[in-house]
Amino acid sequence: MPSQFWSAILNRRSLICIFNGFTSGLPLYILITLVPAWLRKEGVGLAEIGLFTLIQLPYNWKFLWAPLLDRFELPFLGLRRGWMLLFQIGLLCSIAALPHFNLSTLGNIAYLATAVAFFSASQDIVLDAYRREILPDQELGFGNSLAVNAYRIAGLIPGSLSLILADHFSWEFVFFVTSLFMLVGIVLTLVIDEPSRDYHPHSFKEALVEPVREFFSRQGVQQGLLVIAFLFFYKLGDNMATALATPFYIDLGFSLSEIGIIAKNAALWPVIFGSVIGGLIMIKLGINKSLWLFGVVQLISILGYAVLANAGANKLLLALVIGFEYLGVGLGASASVAFIARSSDRRFTAFQFALLTAVAALPRTLANSVTGFIVEAIGWQHFFYFCTASAIPGMLLLFKVAPWSTKE
Picture 1: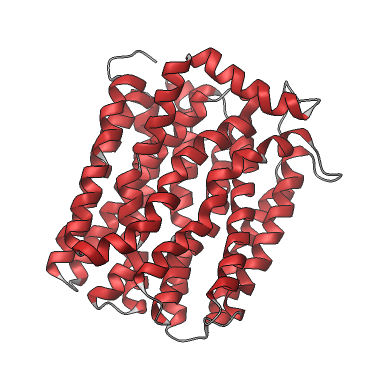
Picture 2: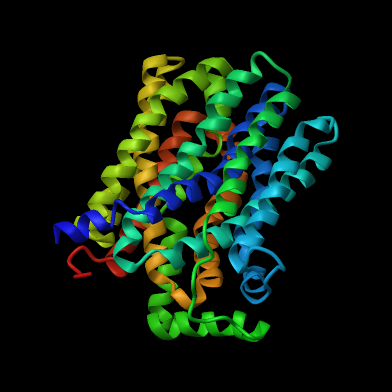
């Protein structure tokens, strides 16, 4: 058992998962952290910024073109790596181009930001499939924990470094520097090996119909629908709470440099701690029990925002809230992604993983699009109480989809 335990941790696959997660998280956090900060500092209203989350709809619809990425292979690097490289180059270019549009034409900015979301969501399809194909079942918890927390570490680039730069340089320079971090993904794509697979669809029908049929035949229709409902509700509360986090900090009176410096120092160690401890907990306890434990931490972390809203511009409290949020939300995301990986069949990773992660991302777009209106109606403090209540249905669904007592 000890040798199996350490072999599940200390291997090349774990290292790939770290870089895989970082590359996946960077473009999303640019959209949900850096873009709102840019818009808010330039005088755009909260309602408009909230509506701007609708540009993330490609994350919810990515399952529609996932079968294409399973069915067709580009003439370079293989099925997974070829698509990775194409989307990563598209991300580097589109992120750098964002601030070159005048803010008086928000529509044009929205179109380009939607392109960033499309490239990012498409990249996620192949990165998730790649990770599922290289990880044996016993490493799903730890490997996905590393990926998710590296995903959140990537948020420190637009959420910390870029904000600090924005107080001293133009937005054009800030977005250009931020886009260069996509080179991490490009280098990763060039040095890793193409995974082996047992199944490759020979028609579009096989790539689309067979994954759906397999999922519901394995889960059962009722249980399959409960799994989908759980994935929607499990992170609903924390997704809503963090949707306007940067505008929230700005409204409290923090400068961009303060937000960036505090975010960097307060988030880094909780993320590292969460990635290691969360992964080890999932190896020891399994995914089901981890969903329960991490879900409770995730729910409590939302209340920290309500405390901060009441206290005002308190730097120490901001550090505590950000640190606990990175720990709690990171742990919850680790367990939910591991649950998605376990719920998907290795033969149909691209479509099934894309479909289930798209469901989990729905709150980040549809629900979050109205968060600005809710805040303007009830204020920041009561908004965070509302987010806490929104997290409860996901916890209740655990009784059906991941019972504590079930042996894994």
